[in-house]
Image: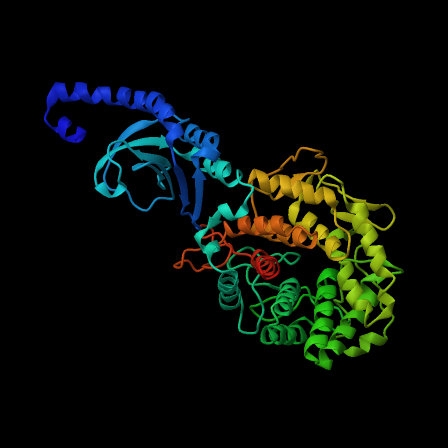
Length: 514
């Protein structure tokens, strides 16, 4: 009706009337809306950027929060813009009061749009309130995702699917997109990053990925996947020294002549458990061989070594009889110590029994009592954190290893609860933080949420573990046209890492198994 009224006038008269529009709009925004706001019955946020989240608010319970949302939306200076039918929005905010609906939508041009006249976005060309959206989108998202005690109220549509369906889509992505024909899992979907000998990039395949996938196969009782990974271990990871190669180049199948303690322990433990379940004695023989190498070359008088380098060693089993000694560094990443893996090793090799409590004590000593763990341990001086920045993947791996081995860090539990309540766990924090978290980055990582979920689950906090999985799933690619559909990656850069996806698989299998 109002648009029809404007079309009756032309020239100066129309210009004068149109100049009044921003004033009328301002009065509407700052006078009418605040008084009408308490009558809002429902608010819904639909986020359509790689995921799809729905939040429902009851005005009687969440009136202040709705006001906060509104203040965020109109906190920037709005301008008036004439636009045709808008395309697919990045997100939409819908506010309803009785039969009256108010829509806000963010587009990829960096603006938030609100239709000034009309109540249906499908009406066609119209006038829109145009609000700069850079600051709005993230703040709005954090405000919403961090404001609920009930984690089930903030879910992507894909997360509203049954847990087996979520997990199945991710498993198909890993085995169908990230895996080569031999069963090795690519470190990254990309295969054009600069190569570095001491790092894993591109289509490098890690013993870490093989061990994590073996664990997942055990968790889901998938014998076929388990046997595939055992075969890959035998053919590509085995070495003349028992310990396993930590990296294999996909292009030529050449393995790196050095190991990683944690991956050797993980695979040996998985083989022992697999033998117990499926009664294949050859798996136990392989596990014993790995553990012999671990005991000879990755520890010295009870002091663990992070790796062993066998470059130059004769590539035959004659090396077993040579007088070879550990040659890895003495400083060990604390996350390499997993008391439960060592305890499983002790069931077939009693020499490992005394090393279980020692590993647990190191993890306890590495607990900084502020939600974080020290990164490294020196045999002479104990655990230490050299950098001010604590990487949360390293810290949570240590916390998870400790919880599985019987040591639960209560400060870490409380820290994660507080951060999840805020709506995020960032990728790194300040080592000296106390009661207040001090993030060192605004980056979020799927692996961090997956590890937080696994730690909280083993810490006896299933509700909080499920909340961490909810946040994990907000990073899931739900666009069926994306090559990363069902998985976790960055469609903009093409980077998609095995660790994020394999940890997410374990989190879904363990936390959402009910």
